[in-house]
Amino acid sequence: MMHRTQKGRLGAQGYVPALGFDLLTPLYDPFLRFFMREQTLKQRLVEQAAIRPGDAVLDVGCGTGTLAILVKQRVPQARVVGLDGDPKVLAIAREKIARAGLDIQLVEGMAYLPPLPLASFDRILSTLVLHHLMRDEKRAALAGIRSLLRPGGELHVADFGPPEGLYARVVFSLIRYFDGAGRTLDNLEGRLPQLIAEAGFDEVHETSHVATPFGTLVYLSARVARYPQEA
Image (cartoon, rainbow, N blue to C red; front, side, top):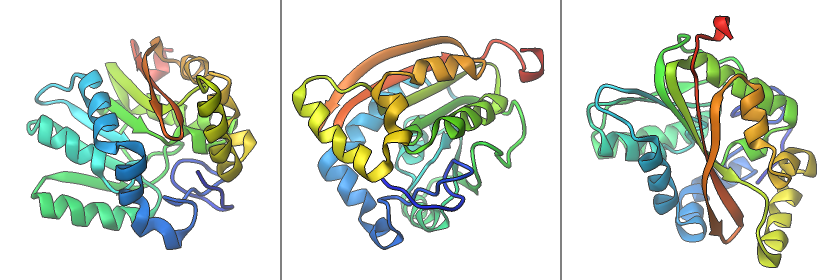
């Protein structure tokens, strides 16, 4: 829900601090807990991903580490990695992970050029990240994400979709104001499944949607059937 010019969490052009301004980053976790029912929404994505013991799991745009912690707590035998371009939120994530006593690797970097080995993950998850990006940034990020998945690997996304009902349309206008119309247009018009498919994913599905105080959240799943060089 933010905009700032320089490199950042996922995109090459627009840096996205946790709540739009570095000063507000410490308020990110309380904001999501109170307004977005964060635990419930992210637990739903973890359940959708059906992570198995031994899976390698990447949380793209991991922020303060809430989703990565949920994954590790649910499947302790999974290898869990968080990727984010914001060192301040990663510092918060490290503190939370240490308090929880969990083994989770955190990596600073961008999805469009991830500093991770190709075809090294079984599941990649992302929540409330793609709506921050311009279309070319979404495409670059999705291509980078696909390159990290093994054949048979899956992408699971929870992000804003077309608002359902007058209230959802009104409140989503706030997100458009902070993030910019260009960044949120693809979400508003329901283009995320198309962009995911164009990045080379197979079996792209919208699995469900949920009303939140800031608009309609859609859950998407997709699969990689082949190595990137074979696509």
